[in-house]
Image (cartoon, rainbow, N blue to C red):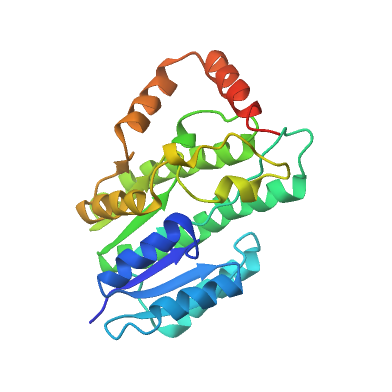
Length: 261
């Protein structure tokens, strides 16, 4: 019998690469995204796989009712989720006092509220069965404050802290939680998050989303609690803990301001 995986934020970037990985392993996939056109493309690419199955679900995870609708669909389908990949995220780029509060609330709802609700529902069933794996896609942003992306960085800190704490609570249950903290990755995430034109974004120096997804998958299979892909990112995470916060945030702010046209 094929195992079932639920992947949020599945239509692009790292999430798309997770779909590819799990399809290659013959998982039955529930892929969640906000854009119907992108979901249709995903189904066109993977829906013909005779060894697995993909169900594409449109859901805006910033809307709590749509989150519960998703969970009700899964429960009603009788599927038991063997692997949960929490990849969906949104962000707002810009000065906090100037940015749109509704967009920031939507980001908090997606990155914290929906993430927590989905994890609780799926994790309870996993623990009851005594098996299952959870992969939470955070970021190296989780290790430091983030001027010009203050809300996003704070939500990723929540995800990291939450994941490690809950992993400790369930360590003898047969269920594992892995938190993946990639650095800058070649996706359009930052461009979609900004109301202004960004310049000086060198994608050539960013990680390949396929490599990031593979690192996360490998750590998931091993039951590893924390994965930071890349030596530079590991080093930066250590430096972020050791450097005075005021100095670190000043450096980040000046560097990020240069990206605004």
